[in-house]
Length: 244
Image (cartoon, rainbow, N blue to C red):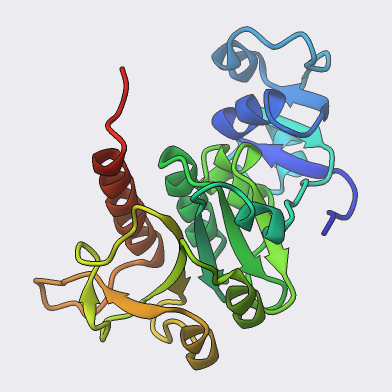
């Protein structure tokens, strides 16, 4: 999947990461203060154009630009099957997460945890936009994100020895600390309220729950993803002692 022409990226962290990420930033607009906050620019950066804050509001379509806006190449989506081909891949799959803030927050957690990628369905899902870039603090510029036509079908193809697909669900039969996440794993997170859809659940190896001690019945999708990701990191660190 490819984007639809140049993309807008705004905010200091998102623009800074885009300047050293996988796509080219072709134009850079900033206030004097915003440019100073960016710090030294890489050699590949375009010559910045100093503009007024009101002009950045128009360029970004938002006032949340922190004095910096970039025009970048279309977002380079990854190939979902290539993510599966990696050794012991750790992947997050989102089932119809439509909130850009959630998608960005999940991408940030996945990148920080060293995940191999993020997979989203083509329909009824948020995709990478300027708002998602901002919510991810620029993590989407480094984390491979793939779009698949049908998530349930992709999960079925994903299954192989050494690769397990686990769907997060309140009624899961196993706690997140009791399932083996030290090998290859796809962690499936559903939309808040509805959760993971039945056919997507059926395409997974099992359901895993995160114990809740309070009165609220569910975690935010991005928080659930972070909990599962770092449990996988913990188990992998135990299986292969960290060096350094």
